[in-house]
Length: 142
Image 1 (tube, helix red, strand yellow):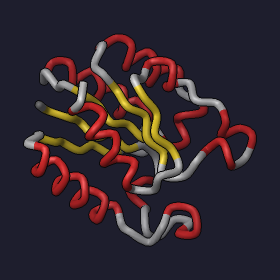
Image 2 (cartoon, helix red, strand yellow):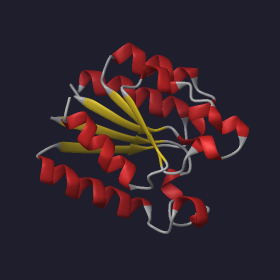
Image 3 (cartoon, helix red, strand yellow):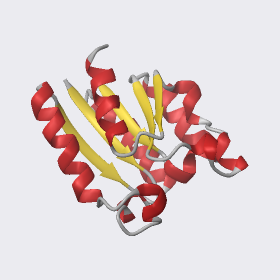
């Protein structure tokens, strides 16, 4: 099984950006956590992070041609604005889990809307970085 982990804008700033919300672990710490869990599950993982919406759309489309079995996506701010990411996930038909480190529903009103959620098989929010591990388990159990 091959899983693609996509992260949107500012996720590369984990550990620096608002540690009171996102914690002190770095982006590399997150990747290490996911690799360790993937190894334990016998799953191959690939990672992609971009601050650019089109690059994330391209990565989702490429996942189709690379025969990726599942996608874990934290669209970050694009969660609340991007119909393009929603359409890309719908187009490829790859089971996708939406992940958020914080719980957007407990934050500002504009964060309560998720466009991509309609195309996802699940959403995990507010579980910190462990949410990515839960998403990995969810995809592996399908």
